[in-house]
Image 1: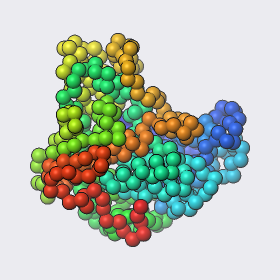
Image 2 (image 1 turned 180 degrees about the horizontal axis):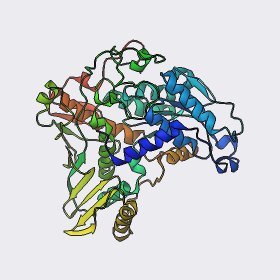
Image 3 (image 1 turned 135 degrees about the vertical axis):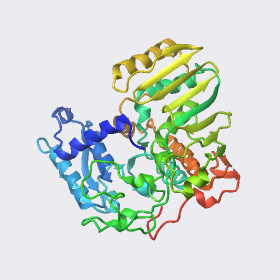
Length: 455
């Protein structure tokens, strides 16, 4: 589910950041950013992804990290030490150290924090995001933005109600190959688009992991939070400071399988290229064999779900090449470090090795120069997803992966999950966010929340 080469590169970087203190180069603070321009940040969720994001934000000019939060003592303390080590040689003006919290509510109660980065398991995303928005914080939240459809609606409304900035961690929007591919589609270079293929594995399945001995220093009840009570298992929350992506993603109580893991990346690009941010499909067809796959608890390889949009375009989940747009005049295929374009049966850009980044850049730059020189539609340009968020915090403009992009993409992912779980075709109103046809229980749009852990 996560064998992508980019993710392997991220793991290596994250492992290094966890193993040694991060010392910022003097140039970051040498510019003497005015206090009013500095962004103070808190980090919630300090697993592998959270540590990587922490290192990335620490390297951004004008950022002060003042707090970290995790329900695991070891991960929490390791993150605090990373921050302290980063500022060991040169403390930014006004910085008084890094506090570590078990409960996110304590971190959000601080009035000196401008923005938070949320990298918890998915089932916590919306609850913490909405709480942060209500507390007046801007939010960088990992993808998928939410655990279910009603949470997506709640987050989008909360951003608007509290006039905050939100960036979803769909960082493919900050990779030029995806932007160029989407601009080719939006500007009609491929002609009329008939269908789109998106490649990712199947939906999550119910948790059936056996009980293990408790992990000392882990607040397991709070890790579960809104999810049903379940015994501790290290596949969900690994012991200590780990260097891999935990298996909670595979279970529907906490994640949503490959559908919301890489689906949140590739469906995001499909909707970007179709101009569907803030919109979505109108009909959903379940994948063949869904009922049998769920009965056998073998959903990882379940593919074939189809999303039909009002334009007639069908987006199909396959095992293939990232994102593929098929038009009447040509096809563009794009993935991380891969870009292919055929136009009027002529090869414009060719496939190259994943490791041959220069060649990849030459291909999409060639396509951009030859075919988009006078393009009327230009998408938001971002070359650094974290910097784009910080720029938006300062400017109060929408970032490249705003709540509308992240929310509508998450909804599309959850619609696939619903179709798989129920093995049912149904119709959907993407603007009113409601089922308009088909025998699907409205409870599929939400979940039961445990105790006080709720929106």
